[in-house]
Structure formats: structure tokens, C-alpha cells
Length: 94
Image (cartoon, rainbow, N blue to C red; front, side):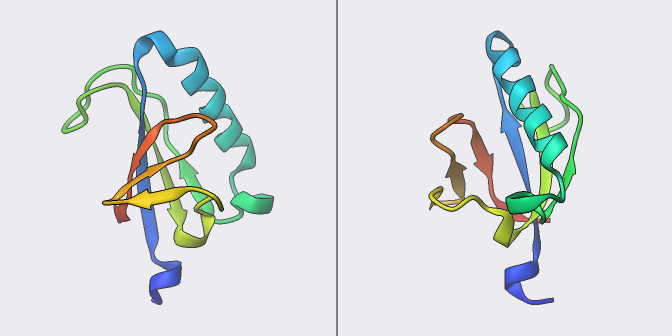
């Protein structure tokens, strides 16, 4: 498998005070999976409102191919941030 098509996953962390915003983002990803600019968004996990395993706070997970990363995002030391929502994503191969 080429590096360009290697699957990645991200955990989108949120505070319970911001759950409404996180839920809207989750719904947007869920509706867009496999379509248009997000054709290579493969999976949107359920929202988890508590610590689960190694994840220290509420979060949901995305699985995607590298070319599904939005244009205009910045990748810095493995953290991907998207200015419109400002969640942080841990970027690593699945």
C-alpha cells in the first residue's frame, strides 16, 4: 500500500461544556462520509462522553485516508488542527 493511501485515524477530543459543538461536527462528518471532499473518510465512531481506555476525555474517532485531510490544515509534530472548529487530532497510521 502506498503511503498516500495508508489509513489514519484521529480522535476528536471535546469538553462536555462544548458537546453541542462536537455533536454538530460529528453529525457533519457522519453525513459526509464517502462524499465529495470527504470521499476518503471511512468511518465516524460514536461520541464517548467519558474517559475510555487511554483517552483522557470525551472524544470520537475518525478513520480516513491521507488525502481526506482538509486543504489548509496545518500538520505540526503529529497534531492536526482545523481552524473552523479548533479540535485537535492525533495523526498516526492505523
